[in-house]
Image 1 (cartoon, one colour):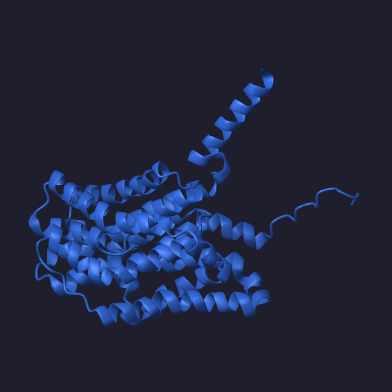
Image 2 (cartoon, rainbow, N blue to C red):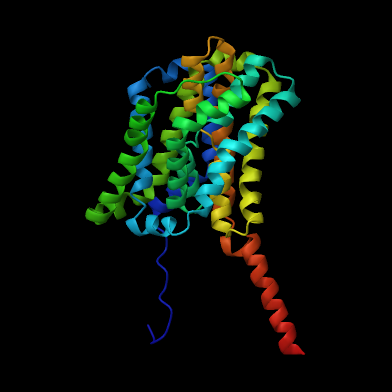
Length: 344
């Protein structure tokens, strides 16, 4: 090539293209998994509690291999977004859930279940959706980890304030689960990226595809465990749960936008705020509430939380960051003013 010429970009491999296409259909796979869980629950009987935990851990490992220590150093230098998202997770979204429950006319048990979704930490699948959306995965992991550790104190407190009943949480068990399901696989993946980089490079195109497969398996399993209740819940509850996740995503984007965070951070905050840990709220409802109806909103949430996050991820994957958002608009405005001055 001539001196100074730009190198020709290598065409994407067939594996990359196939993985990209299948990953882009994440919302479709989510709906199909939920429908199978509702109508054919026996398909997911093999997903035991141990298997469920293992799949979550492997999901985190698939994200960890995309990260380096430098990614986290950059995040620690700007903790503002983590604090803002934490406040939205445990103040704004529970209040939103309480308002939606009241406006929807849900009964006390269903209302408690909806508020409990708002009172829990961010879900691990948000890291996958952030990765698909080409967001800040390290920031996403930090936000998920912060709200997960914060759940030890915040979930019982928020539940007491908004539901009126203290929800006991096994702090030691929750912390141990956090290490097993989130921290250990993430840092294990980072070690692989550091010391087995060639292997990681070879399997990296399959990481998002594996993440999609793992997530839809967890969705199908969660729905299958209470398929009859999901069918009997009615559209009122469906719209309430869907509204919580959609409104959470909108607030999660525009609050950071108003604070003048960059576009990538706004997208990451939106996905994190929208995607609550429905699996954890389902577990709390099962263990600590006598009324069976309290757990039904969480079962419904496993569908809508993944669908909302995956739709955001796929849409943003094809919207270049540099062409959207507050910072880009501000740059264009400055460039226009500069051009006007030069012209005059």
